[in-house]
Amino acid sequence: MTASLARPPPSRLREEVAQGLALPLVLAPMFLVTSVEMMLASMASGAVAAMPTLNARSPDIWDEWAGRLAAEHATLGRRVPWAANLVVHGSNPRLAADLAVCVRHRVPWVITALGNPRAVVETVHGYGGLVFADVNTPQLARKAAGAGVDGLVLICAGAGGHTGPMTPTAFVAAVREFFDGPLIVGGGLVDGNGIRAVQAMGADLAYLGTRFIATRESAAVDAYKRMVVDSDFTDIICTNAFTGAWANKLRPSLVAAGLDPDKLVARDRFDLNRPEEEVKAWKDLWSAGHGVGSVHEIETVAEVVETLGREYVQCLARLDQDPWAARWRAAAIAAQAEQASNT
Ligand SMILES: Cc1cc2nc3c(=O)[nH]c(=O)nc-3n(C[C@H](O)[C@H](O)[C@H](O)COP(=O)(O)O)c2cc1C
Image 1 (cartoon, rainbow, N blue to C red):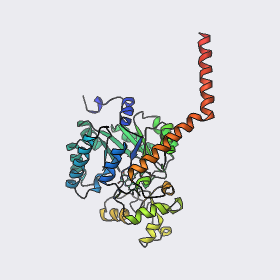
Image 2: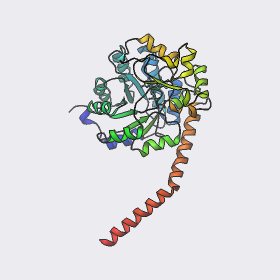
Image 3: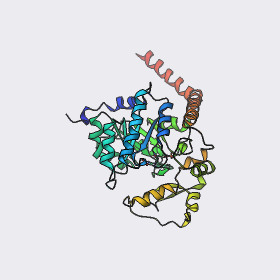
Image 4: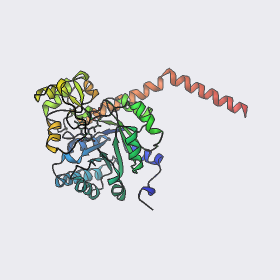
């Protein structure tokens, strides 16, 4: 029997991914922004967090970080998973070494980015981990599902960093036609209403990046955090000028780097083979998504998660009081009563 044949059924996996969480929330992986401290604070707050392995300057440093995170995970009373974010594109020379670290520390979830997840599925399943593939079109989602991943991360329009072209409503509906496993949705989500909305669409967890850039624990430099606090949607530019993939960037950071945001030269081909340029594109040209205008201060991860939790509960209460809910509940009760009287 192959490892993938031994996987739990999709409905069981959907329950499993939500178990132990205080909120259906994943702190999305952010290159040069996610720190070990953010990961620890997120785990302690009951939310999953994901670390891009490339944030560690070498596989040895990644090994040290993963060891710390695994040790903390083992001491937590509540089983909150944590995740590694692996670039599976052929141009990543660290893929094998970073994956070996995931195996050594049995990283609970691996989220693949920028390529076919097939290369890691069997290895991660081999130690009982779950694999999620980050995708931004239904075509890529179908391909990843065919590669045997446990879940999908749907990156939608408005996301910080590399973004997607689709609205979440259309994307989730399209993917639910062929995939009934766990779905995580990201792009422009900034509050508890958005987290609940993702579930209403038929997905399981919300993936938030921009909302956490300006946290105290984040590795973003202070000027970047301040820019996030001071910016709104009008400061966001979507461009493929840097890696060839569409990404949402903060205009003021482009200006500060001496570029004219209105005169960027489009790149027609996705190209990750220029690592120095890639780092520069993230180090000096800062990224944020459509939700940036909802970040008003620099807070701790725990404070942001607490706010999101409060908003989520308020949203549940509001929906429960909604006249539409009462109307449809009454209609369902009446239909049941009629059926009972007819039998
Ligand atoms: C600064 C920054 C860096 C990012 N780096 C990565 C990365 O290394 N790997 C990845 O898969 N996604 C990366 N992303 C995308 C996020 O994981 C996530 O998809 C996105 O933040 C969700 O949209 P939101 O920012 O509107 O919440 C990055 C996003 C930002 C803002």
